[in-house]
Image 1 (cartoon, one colour):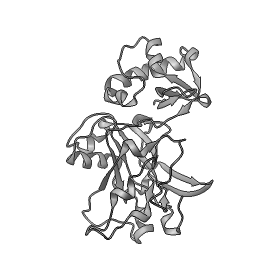
Image 2 (cartoon, rainbow, N blue to C red):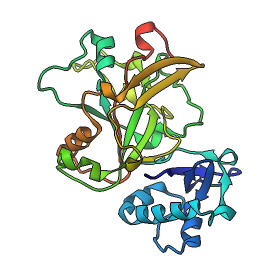
Image 3 (cartoon, one colour):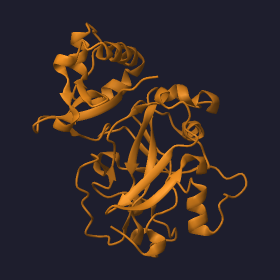
Image 4 (cartoon, rainbow, N blue to C red):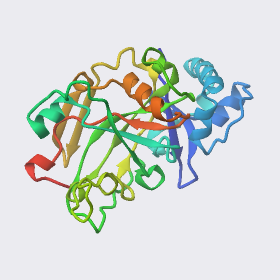
Length: 286
């Protein structure tokens, strides 16, 4: 089972680079490729290029990890405390978001933990390039909204292009998982100047609204994804405390469903929904 995490990091305000985090050590991926005599080409400043060639780069990473365990890369190791971890995929091709996908969230919001029979996932898209920021970056609250809510989510990172993906084969198309805080402008949820009422664009799209990271955990580092813990704190107060066992549509089923409609590409991100504990019901906001 791998122990590495795929990261996007910078040091001393230098441009971000792709790296590996193994325990408390950071290894620049390009440097590690040179030391271990691998010739897989990628842009060392763009994590998306790593995912676009994931089938070739992943075996090289596995080999590098064995050499790290033998101490062969100790001379190029950086302490993690000396680097700044950025969003692992700062510019994904697409950011998909599954709404109302946790039973405890549905119970809290509607009083009914189960979706309607035969219901399918409710997916929206977000402006990834403008929304995504790093895990330690400042969130800039928008001037046009006053009720910004938190939403901790586990996000799927796609590692292989696919269309009409069978749910039983969906894991073959997943590179790994990361974490996002998918903020919502609750006071912009509804509008009454148009006949559609719900404004999903305004609710989920504003600059610097989606902290991501600090890394991508490879899928095979998680033997099971059916009971992963999800916790979120606001000012050291625990607000969300749940588990993926409360998910309605699984990670694999989300991948399959979205691929029925559009082709998924390496580096696409699927936010899988948030559990109970958002601020809206207690009139709390950021």
